[in-house]
Image (cartoon, rainbow, N blue to C red):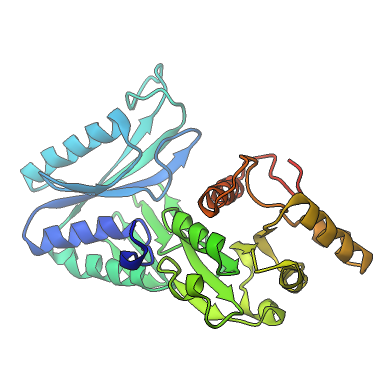
Length: 338
C-alpha cells in the first residue's frame, strides 16, 4: 500500500452498513445477516455480520458452506419480498441431529436474518455515522422493531447482549472495541500502525519529537500527538480493552515511559528492545524499589520469537502477540518468558 494514499481504518462493520445503505437508496432489496450467539469453534463469532442482495454482498458470518447456504436462503426470501426476521441455529458437527450447518469444526452459532426495508434507511445511515465516531453508540434490534442506534450511556454494559426467545433482542457496542497506544512514532511504530490498521484496533501514536517524519506522515493512526513522556500517565487511557507498546528512540525515554505506565490498568503493556536492554531496564527499576507485581505484568521483549529484523517483521511479531493476548490464549509471554 502506498503510504501517501493510505488513511486510518474504519471498523470492519462499516462496509456492511455502507453496502446496505447504498442498496436501500437504489431501491434494491437487502437483508442483514448477523451472528447473535456463538460458542466453541464456531467460524462466525458474535457480532459478525453481512449484507446481502440478489447480486452482491459485504462482510461475513463465518464463511464456508454454512455462509453460502444462508446467503442463498436470504436471496430466495428477498425474491419473495414478504419474509419476516428469523433466527437460525447452525451446529458445526457432522452427527448433530438437527440444524447441521454442513461444517464439522465443532461449536455452533445463531444467525439473525433481517430484511432491511426502505423505512430502515435512516437507521442504517445512523449506523454509518456512529461508526465514523469514536464510540458512544449501540446498535439494537428486536423481534418487534427494526435496527436502531441509541446512545451508549452505561459504561458497565456488556459489549454485546443477546436475549433469546419469542421476544428476542440483540444489541452491541458500535465502533472499535480495542485501542492501541504506541509510545514512539519511529519506523517500527509506523510499521506496527500499518499492520494493526487491518486488525480492528483504534490506533493512537505519541512521540516527543515535533518534527519526526515517520510520526507526522503516519497515515494509519487515528490519533497522533506530540507528548512529553513524563506526562504519559495522564494521556494514556486505562481499561480492559487498552493496549500499550513502548518503542521510543532510546533506553532513557523507554524508562521514563515505562515508569509512567507501570501501574496503569491496561490489557497489555509491552516494551520493545533486545533481551539485554530489557534485562538492564527491569533490573534498574527493581533496584529502585519498583513493585515486583507491576514489573511482572510487563511484556518484554515484545513480539513472538520469529527472529524478526526489519521494522515490518518486528511489527508482524508484535501484532501476533497482541492477537494472542486479545484472544485469551494461554501462555502469554511476560518478561521474556512464555
